[in-house]
Length: 195
Picture 1: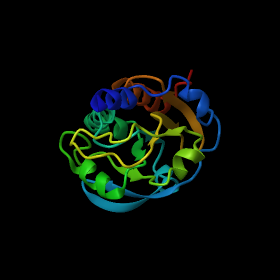
Picture 2: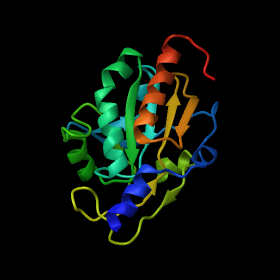
Picture 3: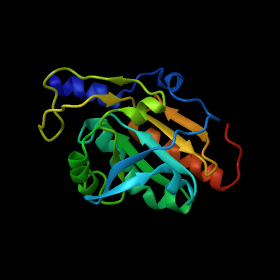
Picture 4: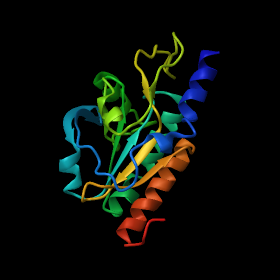
């Protein structure tokens, strides 16, 4: 039963999530966080990433959970396409950094290609006006480890080099979230207007 509840929670973000998030045109809140790439910890700052180009900041409920596993795997598979469009990607969840060290290096998910940042107290998610909720007591991840943190809703922000939110992606499947985000950064790179 817990696995069914977990799958539903992780794959179906709140349908009204785009209404809860910061709107397009808003300056994206700057943040600094412990992050991991290929199991190696580093300090991530949005300001530094924006110096290189647009940044896809994607919030997800939790590492090693159904929908988030799919989303991380899809981002990792498409990372070269994001880089070709001049964009970088950072995943953000309320997981502890120790969990993210394992997730970022897992060949089935982040595969050493996708950096993920720890927002353990939820302050980054709150600054982006995302809803944070709790799952049922005793809920476990796909490894069988009990989840001991809250969950931010699955929402992706595409932030342009000037620090403004150009688009928000939410209310779609994890794989569609990645596909829509990639289309947006490719449109930005091509100079196409965002609709």
